[in-house]
Amino acid sequence: RRHGHPLADGYDIASLISAETSAVRGGEVYSPEEMYGKYLDLVLMYQNEVRNMRAAFAVKENEEEKDDGDDMDVDGEEKRKKGEDGVTMPSYLDFLNILSRGLNSLEEKGKLKDRRKYARFLREMEAYLRGFLDRTVPFLDVQGEVVGAALRSFEDEWARTGGVAGWECRPAEASMANAKKAPGEDGQSDKENGGGGESGVDLSGYKTADELAEAVDGDALKSELARLGMKCGGTVRDRAARLFLTKDTPLDKLPAKVFAKKKGAAKKKGVDGAETNGAAGSGAAEPTSDRRIDIARSEAVVSSLLDQLRPTLEATRR
Image: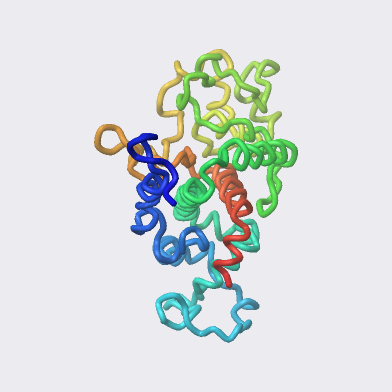
């Protein structure tokens, strides 16, 4: 029996359902590999991103010796092929196992060696996982219930120790935890406060840059400069001189040469000002730089999304 009479009630439930689900039935919502949201489709992610990171995802010697009996990867080629440089790359199944264990199981040294590629991989992963959740659990508040909680936990732990699980604790970088955006990226930035925000280095007790250089550790100076979005290279005295400029001068009055270049600025806008990277339109947060804390924060977001999709990830592994 058809529920709802088109003439008397003005609607027909069967027709409404058929129209609303036509995109799903037509394969426009899920890929064949996703099986209507039952599995994750990370094959292209593996082929385009993971295979290009020969440091971050390289298989260790002790893992290389393990053999689970599966000698083929998703392309029908031998798994864990060793390149000309002697580096053994993971198979697709290895990649899924890494995601299951957690990205913080990867060595920090390798991730930082491939930092730009790894940061791009995290952006692409976040965009895909957000989109997958939007399609499978449309009523879930991903930002508020999943990502927001993960970011709060990340900021709290980094502020205490200067690191999180999978990332070395560096107390000198603890003050960077609250600087989620570089100066000038939003309306309420440090510029409006004359270098405001919670500073990790109190400049009021120093009369000259030389005094600052002698009293403050070079790592602490570097951390504070990075927090403000300024160049943090050079000797300790160079860093102190650069930071000392902010004592009496607002950030927006300082010369542009003292600020670090924004890595993602070149590809931020495309036609009509639209973002052109893989995270466009997804709500994915693109790191403002390839700083250690930015990569770690992005990794925490991806990890929270993977945890939310744990049953689906485990089904994909099987």
